[in-house]
Amino acid sequence: MSALSATREQICRMAKSLFDRGLTHGSTGNISVRLDDGSLLVTPTGSSMGFLDPSRISHLSAEGNLLAGDRPTKEMPLHAAFYDTRHGTGAVVHLHSCHSVALSLLPEIDPDNVLPPLTAYGIMQLGKVKLLPFFVPGDPAMGDAVRGLAGKRSAVLLANHGPVVAGKDLEAAVYATEELEATAQLALLLRGAAATSLNAHQTARIVERFDVDWT
Image (tube, rainbow, N blue to C red):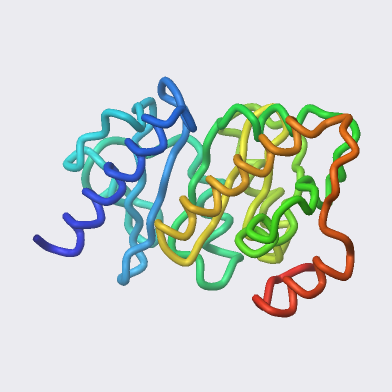
């Protein structure tokens, strides 16, 4: 199997895993992976992540031209913004996962760092997650908002919409997205409780130990 075919299969396999566990639903969510030649494999517009056909995955040139497969997701500006600004990005995952969306609606969250420091892994895998305002789906302004971060964040949470996470490869991006959703769920479960979060000293130790970008 060629590397291109293997990556198509991997996208479908991991997308189905997300769908089967309820982390995405209907035709929501999208995934992209950058190949060694700079071209991209992207889930098609209007497709369900639970029922992707590897042969229909969009293949785009490094310039964004469709080479093969169906038309790509309308959220390409989001994906392109991460590839263009975040060094080392090899994959981007965007979901409409329930708890992350719910967290984006709460008035008390810090827009510069939406996840409370509840676990070490939320800090390790995501760093600070920026809340971006609401945009109409497909609006190129979403990409502009990500570009405005100048590559400083690996993950953002779109208000009333969902998370977008970049990683060095597809596994890293998927795992970090799952961590974001799990931390959002914990935050909602503990809302109003006198929970013991990690303190500033503990957070700093994690940031230093795992070389987390905490800007």
